[in-house]
Length: 89
Image 1: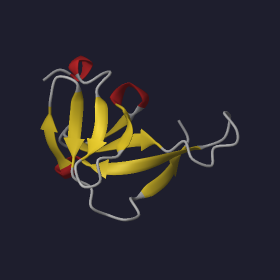
Image 2: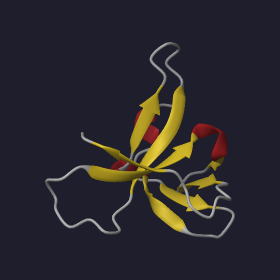
Image 3: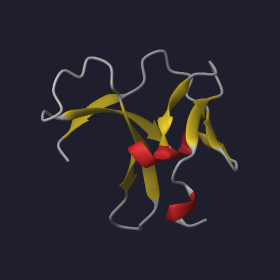
Image 4: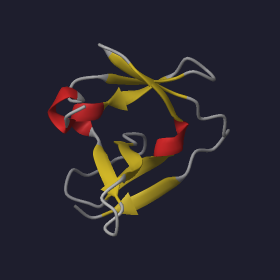
């Protein structure tokens, strides 16, 4: 599947049915050595006060992706507190 085909798909967590975001708003973390996708970085818009500060992301390991459909990507992230990281992009 081409990367351009992922754009616009919603990311939904199978565990709690929660919507985490849209792939168009997300970034991919790619392993430089082999070119494989390591994780989806979904913006965490909670507690964002400034548009110009570092952005917070929820890191979803690629191994949590269970199904890529026509309209959405279904993940299984059963952590109560997903891994949140700050990145300056």
